[in-house]
Image (cartoon, rainbow, N blue to C red; front, side):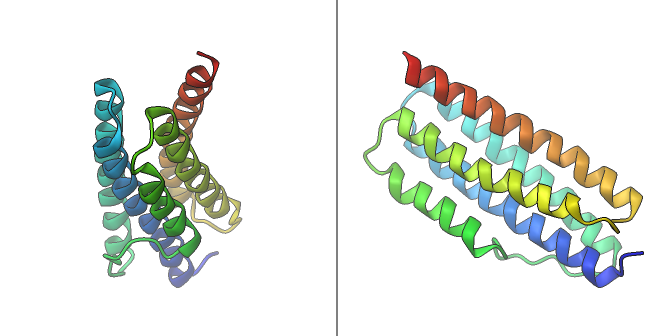
Length: 151
């Protein structure tokens, strides 16, 4: 069985992932020109904030203290910082493409945590539920990017 410490580490990792996404989508919403994109990115940011709150309550329940800073995965943080830098003066297609990159990393981070064989069942089902949302978001943004590319 996984010890608490390891479970807490995994949750902190996901918390950082979600906080980065929340910030990244806020930046994307500010830079998008299409109102429907602005609205989508604002919703995604709110979704990540909500998911982060859920992760925090799991951390607290396990006796941990949620990290307030963003990503423990420096690579992820760089991805979303690149998003922010890349957004300045970009068109909507590029904004969507950068968001897809941020989402790629979020998907990978969730997959990493789910590879952990000793994740307690209750925690696994919680993480899987969140992963489903992250994956759906990723796929929607990827499809949007592809259709923008096609047009």
